[in-house]
Length: 89
Image: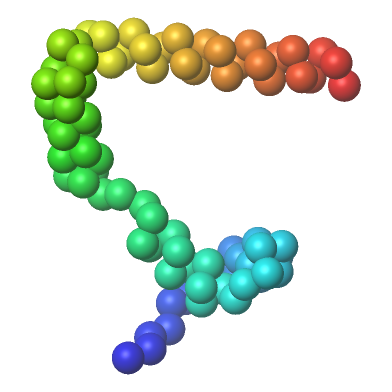
């Protein structure tokens, strides 16, 4: 069963550009997004599964503190990368 989703014209135009760039339709683009985007509960479930796997197979215990530290480091690296890229441009 099909349905209609109402968005403003700017969003519709952006979706059309993205779909064209990927060689697909807006319908397929939205379907891909819906299928690939995790809900907060799915993210939590995946994180718990990953933590269990790391503990079982590698003896690594991931805590909220270590996760937050890794996230801070990754964000810092991303910021540094883009700053370097902007300086080179």
